[in-house]
Image 1 (tube, helix red, strand yellow):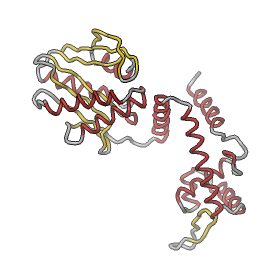
Image 2: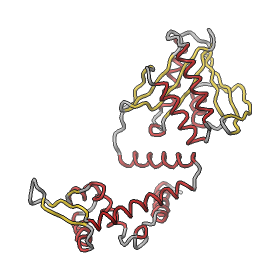
Image 3: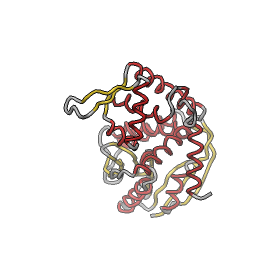
Image 4: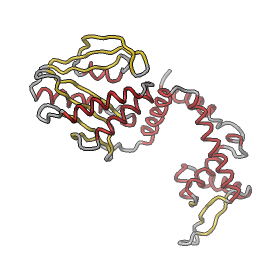
Length: 301
């Protein structure tokens, strides 16, 4: 299947899945175009037709006909704007607000039901995929990602982010979060800034990734706690963090960099392989509420 056919197939699948083809959207008396207009006005409180047309990318003539029909139904009203009597401010009537609330509640119930049939890791995958689609099609310039060393408050985020993401995406329980807390605490308590480092990746002032280089002994360092938030995946941040760690360890005179990962962490394993790490051992174990295969990788520096 080529790319055009794949997108068209998804469009057909999703419009059917959300009930967009029904005469009344989500059991209401409104077809989808009117329901979308009702929702937008309800969210904004009030707006002009031109603002509404720009937001929804609708022809103003077609939008005008939609609004006239909704005014006849008694759900939309308009009055002259205070700052300019030639402009009409649109808002919902009491009947319209009731209809908007009903549609909003039904939409939330529909999505909750859809997600409720999925395991937590699949829910996270779905949300991440939808965010990626929106970012690509919207065409907005992505904010730059910067790296810095750790500071007070960062370890709390590192622990929370690992616990949250590995539960959502892998189903690992709170014992994994406890392990991360132990690693982070030991790093802070024994930190040797001449031989060790933590990198925090930031975007728009918020942490979105991290990695640690920790001294194992005088010749060996350990790469630990590599993490990339879903909203910045696909931008090469994971590899960038690993390469920073490798360069730092080489500069400090380590002869070997080692790490421990799991066989099902495919994205991380791909980064390790591409940056020169070799798997040297594996062992099955039961940890964090699931059965896993631990892997030991190393890179000669």
